[in-house]
Image (cartoon, rainbow, N blue to C red):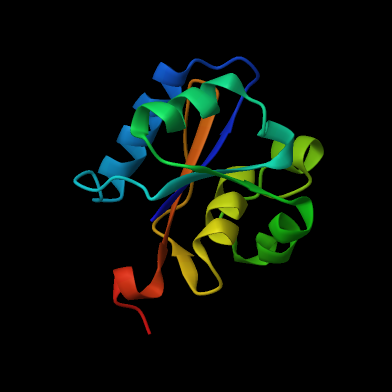
Length: 130
């Protein structure tokens, strides 16, 4: 399972972790910890995302723009802000899908709160879809 993250600049790790917990709860995956966090190159140096991954003791996948664009048709959300700033309909959804692999699916559309966007992607084997 991969948690894709987008956020406003200088968002604290605590806020990111809180939004992640809520997103996991809403997708009925609260009992699980993501295997990694994913974001785009535009957020690669965002301190809050880095600290959130450290606290969870999981790696961060920084997804290149071409990979984000390749999975863009599979995202569930179209955000004009994300298109303008990140060049993809939903940075968090695209990052989660790209990092989770070719057969990954989104558990739900992105969850948004306090300047943080979070999307959970799982491999088809985790959802039971064929």
